[in-house]
Image 1 (cartoon, rainbow, N blue to C red):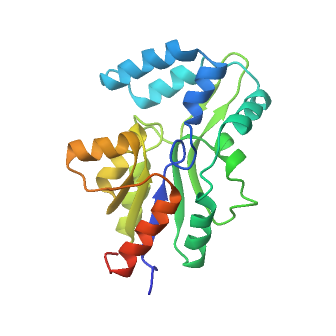
Image 2 (tube, helix red, strand yellow):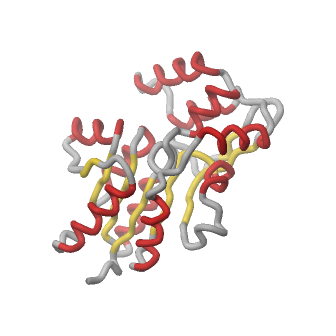
Length: 219
């Protein structure tokens, strides 16, 4: 059995973790439910880009990153089945890339390079200023990070791509990946758009699905 042409991509917030870190930080240290509801309404109405929504939410946070780190570590959990999935990908020599609309500084708290040396992480950056946190986005797209671009590049290089995600920033990725594993809002989006997907709850489910489809030669 060979997996040499498979490249797996996964979202971070709400997919690897049980909670979206950007929503959590805004709620606990920033503008709270009011700004979240305001931004959410505009996103749902397509009158605001995700990039502008994240910018607005982060600008309401004036806490130090040390304070934020304490809360994040105390309240947000990584799926306990994620590490076994990473180890399986490593054993099979399958490239695994985290694609996030969030920030390296937060992701690195949960997925440090010392523990995950072969894990590629593509995300934006955050500057925790006292006047309001400032986003340094990865690119100029409406998402702040065009996650679908990395998947398209892998496909162009001859890889069969699998994308794992759960939310708004994952829609474009689901539209271009060869296979989609989805939960929550992304699963609903795929159903309404006629995009084939496998639904999951944990990375134990993800591992079973990937192995099963590989064994029957589907990729």
